[in-house]
Image (cartoon, rainbow, N blue to C red; front, top):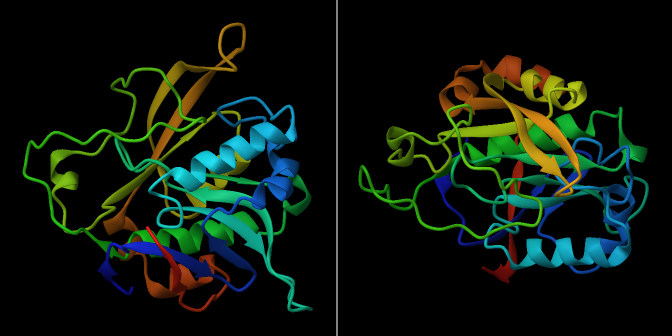
Length: 257
């Protein structure tokens, strides 16, 4: 696995069929297909977008986040038969590292059952687990405040959550572990996470209310993948799980962050 310092400017990640890159204003029109689809949004942390203006607001919040193009990306599908720009079909990434380096992903329904989620997630993990910390925090240091996000849960942390330990926060690796929060009914996403090595780490009933007062209460299954577990898997096994894909290409973009 290649290693390197945390990038100081936006990068793009190229896979055989996808380009993962920073969000751009024009992405809203394409991504509205996913964010307005009740089935695609069934297990997301907010209701489907009622109109394009909501998706534009979400894209704007992603663009304003310091994680845009560093740990949070738009998933774009390449057209291998032409030189056209890749088409936005979803999103993937860590939008707020604290308290647990939580990753999330969403792909428009028209592109399900093609292995694209697995391809995007595998390359994302390879990238994130390759990044070293700038400076490890002092043991016991107070975590800095993080930017809020429109689709972040709002319930207080409990013992069921997976949070970074002091040891992890002082690691030489920027992402010593990565977590996920899945609706227990979302078997497809849970299956994908387990396929790349995530394991259950906690369960919380009625963890969030979708859409605010009057909305549906849902439970959370928390999962976690440690960097050591990812690295310890043999190269042959990881290549097999990723369809014998080549090493990821992490390409710096021209826009400073």
